Image (cartoon, rainbow, N blue to C red):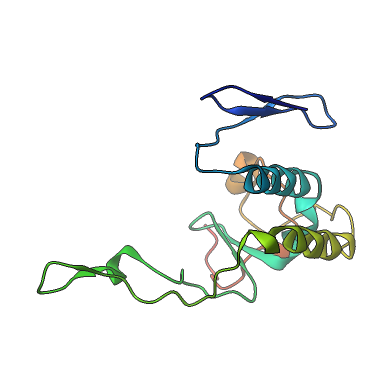
Length: 152
């Protein structure tokens, strides 16, 4: 169920009957809005299945995909002003897909999530007791980045 005001945010009531407000600008059409809502619900319900694919660095608090690049594809330092005063941004590295691809992207995500096991063990991580006392989030042992030998 959606509640749409003339200029206000859209409210969606998922299966949990907890209203969630999605601020949507005038430039977001119904297809994109529905995609965003479905994607958020999908990750909220099943995102934990992807945890083993990510590594958590306790020194920085950063999670990254184990096969992904360690650095983002673009940094602010990559953006420059040319001698003519024009902004120069490196060409995008990925082809952009149109709205027609959104449903297929959700279907692909559902298939990936369905193929993954349910909740993982949240056992000892080998991190210092001070860290463990403050940790509030699930952290399967496989997710701990072991690239730093000093965990203190």
